[in-house]
Length: 336
Image (cartoon, helix red, strand yellow):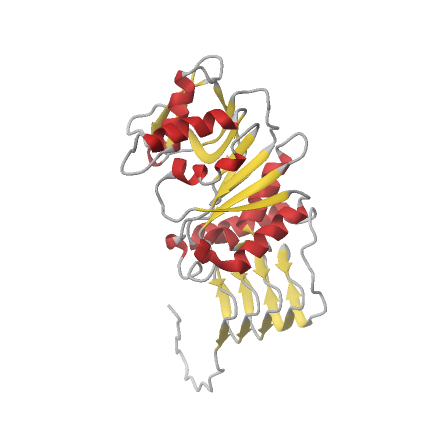
């Protein structure tokens, strides 16, 4: 089994946190989004992963490539870095990793996390990860026949057709067949809304006899914006609590840790209340503060603040001076 991870987007909805790192490298419960995604995929596979091909921009830099190499090494698999120079659609992104398009292949777009109990049935022509949603109008959905085979792919249906939303993860039994269909789109400049779309390749495969089935997940977690990342961090910590080591630093002064929290290595915390649902990156310092439901990245210094549902980047300095108040009776002071 091979895994292809297209992750060359800029992540503009998550700015300013994606100005210096790509969105899939933003930490969720102490690990980059892309690492948690790959770990979830590995749990869905019977057998080993031969290689992981990460599709990025060259502008992401050596630090990102080194981290992706670490992710692959942790899973004892080969790491390949491919580049997408211009955003020309989902099918184009996948084709940038064409050397990995043979045999059994999983394609997973790196802006979503999931929980599931199912294992991939590698004998199927294809499996498409789906999640039941309340409002299908905002998603691409699949329609099934009585044999649980996908008959149609519908993008953002305005009338109810199905509530099974495609979450951006796909298994293909024959990677070569997918490569051939995408090459056909590129060679003939077949675009939809100006881009080469994976759904067009899926439709062509289906017309030639491929039978795709749904793989329904139990939870679908988005990482598209700050609010979504904060919620996903909460759910990630809940899931990791008891299953992973989360507290790599523990010797704190006059501090209360309300679990679940992730505390990275070499973190200093003094006179603070941390948690629940807080992730603190390696080398950060927190003093005289209250922090809950927040993500604080690496080598950041925080002093004298109250944070809730906050997202703080790497190497940030945030300090508020104590004020010498003199407040008379019946005074109200609000920070709104």
